[in-house]
Image 1 (cartoon, rainbow, N blue to C red):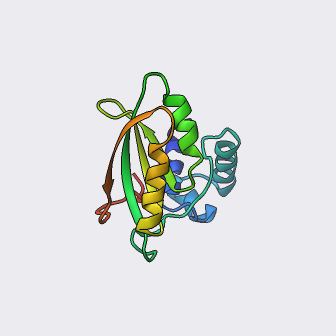
Image 2 (image 1 turned 90 degrees about the horizontal axis):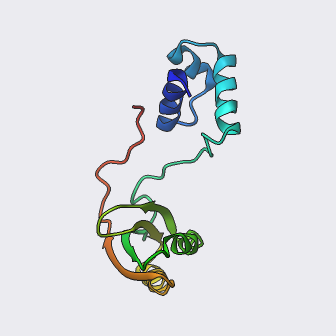
Length: 145
């Protein structure tokens, strides 16, 4: 990846729906070049998909939380595989320090959240969890860098 690819990715992170005809002059290249770069980034797996960002709190009764997970011994890979199967787990992050994994959880209701958290705590290999409900989002990264 070169500097042009990095700039293109930055613009697409800000708005993946930006037309190629707008991206080209912003990058100082032709539309064909932009289209070819996007296609190559998709084909090589650098771009794994295009998505939307929903405004936090825009969905009624949405419960969002961060759960820190401590894993027993060498069970991290097995635990991650299990957590990937939970539709309520929106993202997983490996970390250093006290916690091994951080899971972002999203459910429609507190009851669903409680059930999800109980299921997570039953995953073999998880020794301890700590959860914080997200009350509001102060900043989410969507602008170009």
